[in-house]
Amino acid sequence: MEKLNLFFARIRELNFWQRLFRWKKLRNLSIDAYEEYRALSRELEATRENLDRIKNRLTEVSTRNENLAQRFRDIELQSERKDAQLQELNGRMREQSGTISELTKKVSAFEAIKEENVRVFNENIARLNQTKDSFEAERRRLDEARLRESEERFEAMKRQWAEHEADVKNAIIRICDLNHVNYIEKVPFRGNPDNTIEISGEYIIFDAKSPGNDDLSNFPTYIKTQADNLKKYASQDNVKKSMFLVVPTNTIDKIKQLTYRLGDYDVFVITKDALEPVILSLKKIEEYDLAEKLSPEDRDSICRIIGKFAHTAKRRIQVDQFFSEEFIDIVLRSQKDLPEDLRKQVIEFEKSEKLNPPTEKRAKIISIDELQKKSEEIEAESRSRKLSLPESEEEG
Image 1 (tube, rainbow, N blue to C red):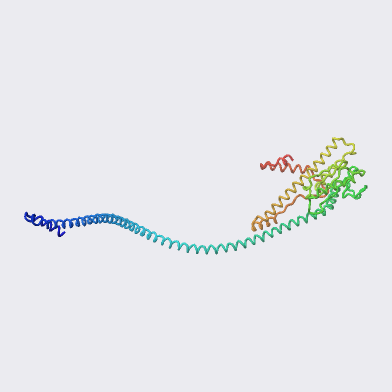
Image 2: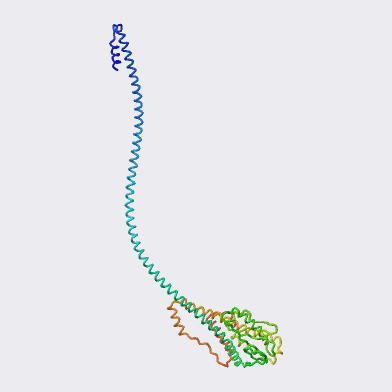
């Protein structure tokens, strides 16, 4: 830069004489100045390039600075948001702390209640177990009582079956005495039937049959066999071809077939309660001089009356058995289902009750007129009280 300044200063001071006599020095100075100029140009170009690089770098730095500033603003905004969230979280934390404190108190209260409930539950379980034991004991007692009642009932049935033959004989003798029918102690034919009566010169056989044990499943087969065995009497002279097997009342529902048509003789299965109507029906034959002289219509009428008596007696026995079972079931249920205090009160009232059915006087015939009159009185009273009787009773 020094020679270039010196060259331009010489050019400005150059005169004519110097152009003539000092041109060579000036030319050499110009060459040096030019070289310096070129060096300056190169330095300037390099400076420009450096300047461009610096500008570019400055632009990058400015852009980066703007980005950093934007990021800083974003960070500040995020920081503000975080602060707001932090404050909100702090508020929520304080609320949750209050809730936790309240819940802790509730948990403590629940724990206390739980302990009380556990104690009450254990006490209730103990009482329940005690009640269960009492119930089981009561159930066992009732089962034992029902078992005893069943055993007693079976024992009573066994006694009834064991005494059945004697009861039938006594009943037939009593009926014969009341109605003046000849009871045959020793029969004039082969064999030894349980009971034999004589009506119109014919011997009518009543054999008493009862089960040998509690199992009634084979009883119908046993009755069928006994009906077949009566054939030994059917072939005897003057023995009526209609014979009767008398069974206990509580076994009649087990027997499906009550009439056996066995060729030249018939066998009818009846109960002790049906003895009197059957014997009375047979006694009606005595009103005729000879049974052989009866017309077919008379025979049909007699047979129809006997059948009606037999059916009515069996039906009455069946109805009595049904209501006996129902009454027994009601009594057992009252003993089982009623509370203890009510059951005791029922027992006291039961002790104070008494039924007095009409007594039967020996050698006195029950008057049909009196029965019909009593029936009419009951019907009139029921109508006066606007009570409706079943059709069967109204017709009767």
